[in-house]
Amino acid sequence: MEQNQDLMYVPRDARNASEIRLAGFTYPNGQVVSAAQMAELLEQFIEATPYLKNQRGNIVERNGSLDPWFNRVDFRFLQDIFTDIGKTKNTLQFSFDCYNFLNLLSKDWGIRKQTTLRNPLQVVSVDAQGIPTFRLSTFDNGPITAPFQDVISTSTTYSIQLGLRYIFN
Image (cartoon, rainbow, N blue to C red; front, side):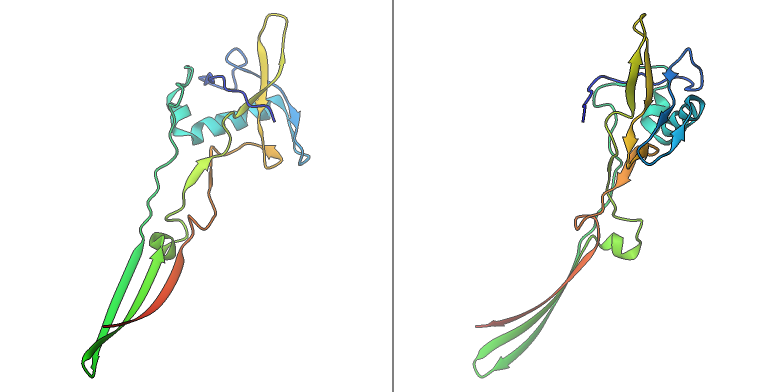
């Protein structure tokens, strides 16, 4: 896969051919997208990305965009039960740990998002005057439609751990 590290120009209006040239394309999932549909998809992508939306008519800054903020709260509850057996003190300790507690409360909380692709546009061709024609990059066998995707892994889903410990002196 080709990795282009050029900074992107964000058109004021992707539907305006003097701002950006877009080509139609047939994606691996069989979806046929005309140049006009490609312009609409690009407009939707820009509107869905706060950083790009604010950079219309400009070239983006290197490292100018950040991933969305996310919150993660871990929770621990310990309970000790003491008893004396003879001259020794014995303790039974119960523990309850919940990692990413917010995700336990709501499936939409505690989820981290990551960038879908670094380059939402791919060069299709360059004419004799050096003007490129673009298309939206492929993601999940179709055109890229969202700037971020949820990270679904054990680091972003909740987990519960129960513990029991016997302490004697």
